[in-house]
Amino acid sequence: MKNIKDYNLNELKEEFIKLGEKPYRAEQVFTWLYIAQVTSFDDMTNLSLDLREKLKKEYDFHNFKIIKKQESKDGTKKYLFDVLDGNAIETVLMEYHHGKTLCVSSQVGCKMGCKFCASTGINFSRNLTSGEIVEQLLAVQRDENIKINNVVFMGIGEPLDNYENVINAIEIINNQKGINIGARHISISTSGLIPKIYELADSNLQCTLSISLHATNNNKRNSMMPINTKYPIEDLIKACKYYIKKTNRRISFEYALAKENNDNLEDAKELVKLLKGMLCHVNLIPINKIENGIYSKSTNENIMKFRDYLNSKGITATIRRELGSDIDAACGQLRRKNL
Ligand code: SAH
Image (cartoon, rainbow, N blue to C red):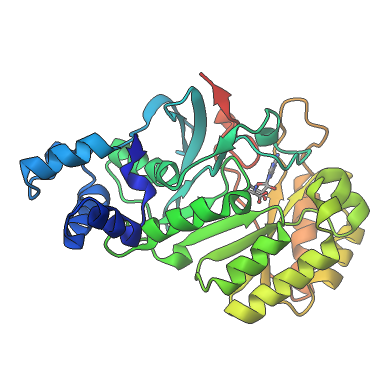
């Protein structure tokens, strides 16, 4: 059966027209779904009983089941959701001073093969639909009785490898008649799918783009991120410059620091050369250890030296807080699971 949450507002109106219903009915349903957050058509009390029955025959809600919920000592919460087809994905809720941030998954598994990331350890299974992306927010909001303030596409999967569903989910999340989270409070992180970066730049979506850079030359980046052999650094930086010019928005570069791999002063110098003059910010991530991982975390001293060097050269750099590592909820630790 079709998932009622797979449609943005315009698409839902078209669906209703096909059913011989007035488009404003679609708007009522949309509001029930995302503002009132009801979980069945029977709760939509301003629809006639006939219409409710008709909708029940066509669509269902695909409400996720929580298989497991873990809480870190820093307050981070990790959900393992049953996505109702024998697969399970993880979603992470974090509390920052600027509100509640949800880290959502975009695929079941990942094709990118980054050597430091657990999400890639098990094979790719499928894309999540827009409704399944949106449901991660709804399920957490229902469970915790909260309103999410920020969404980051930094869970399992490569969001730009599931471009259409991700953009469609963002439309639902961003719509004022929907979940109503401002585009600037939504971040997409990518390992660097260049053609999609151009597409995103041209889409005029005001969300924040993060680039998983992690290395400053092709040899090193190839060894960490196989996708770099297809989309090398110089082309990636060119795409980023186009994105900045087109959107006038600052890009955030993620750089996970691995001991004796990419964390010495030479790397920092190369990074400055690469990013000089760009409207950007560097987010340093102390690399999180994963099962069978070949990389280990840099020393605190190196991490701070790296940050200070970048800042001294006029490139703003911050160190990402390590939230949830005790429950394997930190960057790179999320995995797809089979039920
Ligand atoms: N596929 C997207 C989304 C993942 S986002 C992307 O590659 O950007 C999660 C961020 O955490 C990315 O920057 C990713 O490279 C980084 N990451 C992955 N594994 C990590 C690890 N073990 N330690 C720290 N950061 C990691």
